[in-house]
Length: 201
Ligand code: 3YE
Image (cartoon, rainbow, N blue to C red; front, side):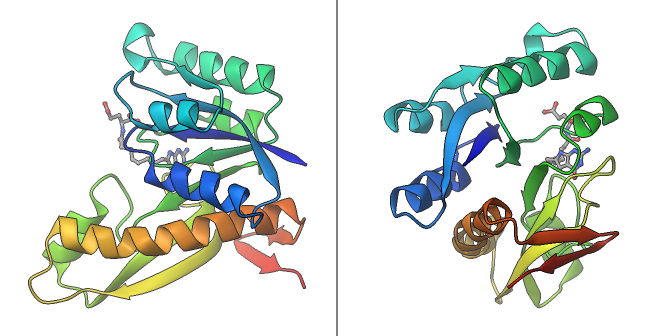
């Protein structure tokens, strides 16, 4: 059984969708630890409420990325984590972290990659005027939002959408496809071949 380490920075609604999917028996994994990079991340409360170990590795208390990531790695290894799940985690990971968990890190991005990478996807989507957006689950590599794509879901962009209304529509899909992608990994059904991720029967 895979042991997940979920990294968060915010409200933790994607984390909650994973907790709930495990509870319904739709994801056959265990969340070994939830880590946040700031103490006010509500994800920490969600984890504790679900009886999951929750630790703040406060970025502000570290002098530079490498010591911060070493601390993350230490927590993940102590918990025996086999798959790292970024769920609204707002930090770029350096090659040190990416190589430590090579091929074992997933992220969800709230747009249809390779369009609109980065920290302000909904704002960028609305500014560009595209009519379709969505979300993307991908493996994490050394680039930002550039790794092999596992699953995507599309939603319409509607007249009068704000970052909030579009974000809520995309979030509904995030809560469906992130647990699905994690379960596919847990079943050993994701075969990565360069950029292509094949989903095995
Ligand atoms: N790291 C790698 N590859 C990826 N992290 C995320 C995805 C992903 C990844 O595919 N290697 C915004 C983060 C963007 C940003 O620039 N953050 C700053 C700090 C901002 C602050 O001070 O709060 C930074 O330097 O990390 C997760 C999504 C990252 C989204």
